[in-house]
Length: 217
Image 1 (cartoon, rainbow, N blue to C red):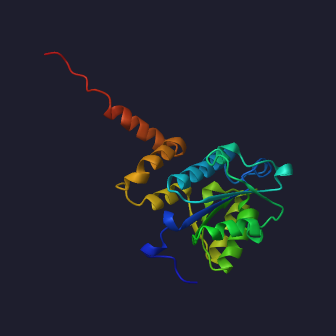
Image 2: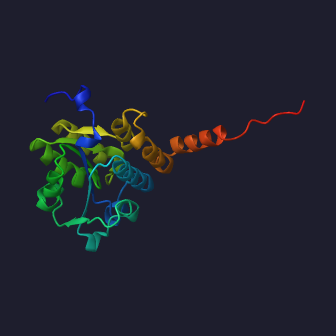
Image 3: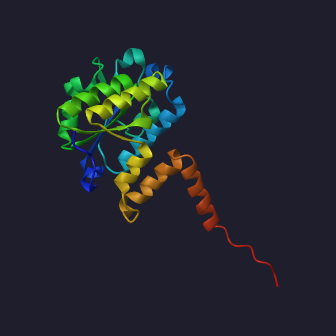
C-alpha cells in the first residue's frame, strides 16, 4: 500500500465531496463510543464547514420511516435539499447515492456516519476498492461501543482509508488564514461548534473591543 504523504495528499475543498450517512435517532439511541451530543455537534460542524467551503454534501438515511429522519441540526444547514433514503445498509451499493457523488466530479470522498463499524466501514472499504481517495471523519462518527468504533477504524486504515477529525479537516481546507473568502465563514463555524476555541475567540474579541481603563491624573 502506497503511503499517503506530500502536499498533494492534503484535502482540498475544490476536490472534496462529503457523504453524511445515517445521523438518525435509531442509530443515536445505541451510540456508546462517543457522547451523542458531541457526535451530533461534530457532524453539524462538519456540515457547516463543508458549506462554508462550497463542498458538495450528500445526505442519506436508511429506512427513515422506522429509524427516524436525519437530525434537523444537519438538514437545516441545507434547506430544501433532498435526503436520499435507502434500504441498503451499505451506502455504496445504492446507485442513487453513488451517481450523485460521481456527478460532482470530485475525487476526495469524505465520509462520516453512524455507526462506524457498519454504515461507515462498508462504503469506505468498497469505495477504496474502486479507486476512490477516502477520508473518514472519525469524531463525526460513532459506534455501539468503543471497541466497535476503534476496530472499524483499524479495519478501514488497513484497507487504505485516511482518518481525520472535523476540525482538522476544516483547517486543511482553509490552509491559509489569508484566504479571506472563507476565513470569516469558518470562524463562525468555530464559534458555534469548536467548544473552547470558539469561546476563546469570542473572549478575545471582547477584550480587543474593551477600552483600557485610565486613571485621572
